Image 1 (cartoon, rainbow, N blue to C red):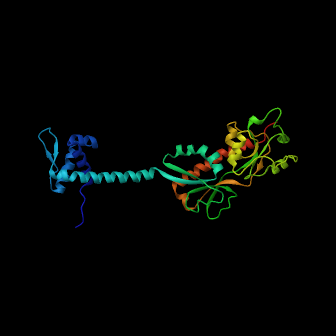
Image 2: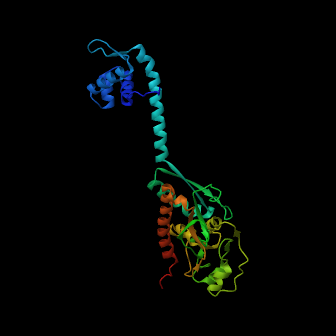
Length: 311
């Protein structure tokens, strides 16, 4: 014979009445009438075939019968299990995790300063940031849902959306500019230390584009990460070829200046990359959409900084 379940709502009422030993207080805690509580208890007792409460005199309250005392702890445990299971499901729905891979310089100088805006917009989503090398493919390994990549966008069998382009131009701390060491024309770079970023176009290309050929571009400190050369420029150690996306915030804060008009276009851009199937996940979709929107705002800032200054 299959096991039968008693009326589940009656169990909730029984637990409340047993906890308070009062139909009146049980009704108040459940936001129902006392008559409704009495009806549910009567229905449960009839279903079980045993009384669960002794009614003690007029106004004296209730006492559990022997059957009621035996029944209560098991009902408490069952209802607690239902509550816990329900909370776990609801918490999983409310809080989801998106794992995002990004190059360390972009993550430090562009993504992290903006990430709090996403967290405020989507408080139910937790973001895990993974710093990845160019050669690492955390997406293929299943370590992340989204990969922020820097390149030409040629990654087959993936969903690829460009969200930020880039230009390259000299930047420096305003503290290194003086009457003795000005920064009015590109030739003034002869009086300054050049900082080198292995990941961008070299100084020879930029100087050639402005017609300066008598500066030794082999001299000066070099760095293999863009955030290091950017930090060195902010520190006043010399003049760096800045990557637009990575120096815009520092320029906006006054930590860096763009002393010359000429910018070099970059064939590489920033892309949000994920598998075709993952964009169906609302958490992944939310982060991708936010990233693209932030890219548009940042692009407008970069374009304004890159535009030639007036006479």
